[in-house]
Image (cartoon, rainbow, N blue to C red; front, side, top):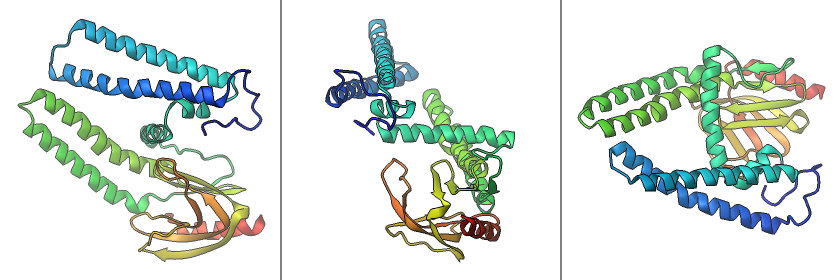
Length: 287
């Protein structure tokens, strides 16, 4: 993404070359990387009750504020140069960090949608195929184990208030909420068969759109073992896939942190796999 101008965007302002913009971006990132560990140390010290000189606190907060302002100014400048909001953020924040933050936000949003009994990304005319039923018992079991572990750690660390508070937050978020969020994302983000594309999703980290004209073959194929091979993407639910799709040409299914992954064969599962198989075959024939 870095150094490219979006298609159809207005030309960059005079004097703004990719090299100079890249240098400014690297400098801003370097300052951020240097400041973040210092901020973490200060927060840990405050939580642990370590007394920090007021001048050091003021200096740290002032540096964080200046870094935030500089980031906002750089973001506004990139937007004026024709970058989209996502591309401007990509210039300032590393792609893996953006993807991690986006993943966590989607998990939290999925929890809200789950409570509200709503689904994400479904439009009028879309056929919806849920795929979370067969993993529900396993995910609820994981959540229960995390709850028991949280209660046990809370009891064991009761005499160390600071450690108790830190471990409690980590256990609740990275254990209970994370597991429930993954299941909620699977429930609220079903597979979708649109008039022009098949949209395959898994939890909060995979959302792959496949144009119907690129689908060469569709098979109902129940599999419980999956070997990792180049060019193949397996999306098992409870260790099983039930539909196999072969493409006329590879599509990119980005890895979790954004790395490219061209695939020409996809295997996935749905609660009603036979209905999805029939609907997809019919849709491909009609294209």
